[in-house]
Amino acid sequence: MNAPFAPPRATIRLAEVANEAAPLNAFLADHPDATPFHRPDWLLAVEQGTANRAMALVAEQGRALTAYLPLSEIHSPLFGRMLASTGFAVGGGLLLSEGADAAPIIHAAERLALSLSCPAIELRGGSLPERSPEWRHRTESHAGFVAPLAGNDEAQLLAIPRKQRAEVRKGLEQPLTVHVGTAADDRAAHYAVYAESVRNLGTPVFPRALFDAVLDRMGPAADILTVRHDGAPVASVLSLYHGGAVMPYWGGGTMAARALRANDRMYFELMRHARQRGCTRFDFGRSKTHSGAWHFKRNWGFTPEPLAYATWTAPGAPLRDADPTSAKHAARIAAWRRLPLSIANRLGPFIARGLG
Image (tube, rainbow, N blue to C red):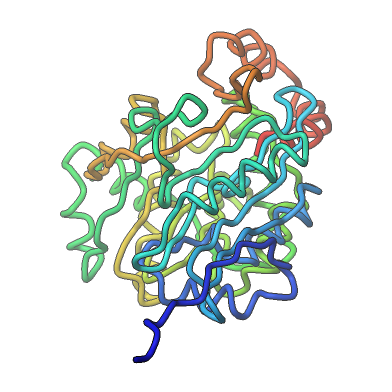
């Protein structure tokens, strides 16, 4: 009598992100929960642009990949060290093949964090570990906003609620020009607008090198749309494309944008551009629940869907608090808003590269 067949035992290891991009991308191509932030190119762009190391844990059974956890090793003098899945992203987290067990790779991530003196892990979506004293789950802090794109411009306008539609129409009537590209002029215009926008919100701007690395590594899966008035950029957004969806990811407007309705024009033009590219969905990204951005996206007719995150804290370590809405940081944010833009742009990247 033949002995029963025993499947090969699963092994877990650290993958070489740069050298194993092909098999990792093949796994992602077939996974329904994959995001742009799982891609090796994203991890490597974060490493190149912020000096936070790209890492990935994988589980294999024989030659088959059964689990994948992309990680960025984040260093911050203000908030401490952590492993993020994924760094500088609103998504990421553990991806499992059908029937795979999350526990072994989660435990491997905990051991890895301790070996790197990282007292925290943050998983932004994906398959979450079981709740425990070390793992805290959040479903109320952030929401995502995704809706289908309409078939043409007029249908897209009619899909927007009446009050917001009126703002978009006003933006369409303004003497504004729109350009999409990734050339040096596009990048410079976007960074200038984005830096001013986040300074006004009290947030340090990310390094210019991060945006350049994302555009270079993501290739046709990323571009910049900029709205100009009298030749000056007033609104600009760097967007990502994945799985038939466009995601306006890093965007903002100058002080002049509000009167011109340039931000409203920008998002409508991006819907138009994405449809021409063959996209079928508009992913407005995540926002803090009940924040100004949360309400803005609802005004466009998008329905908030709670996002699930999980955070691990090493035994005996304090909880990591990098939440910009935390009362602990309110004074810092208020002070940052008052900084001259030139100073904010000089200091911001040194701080922001550790925010993760």
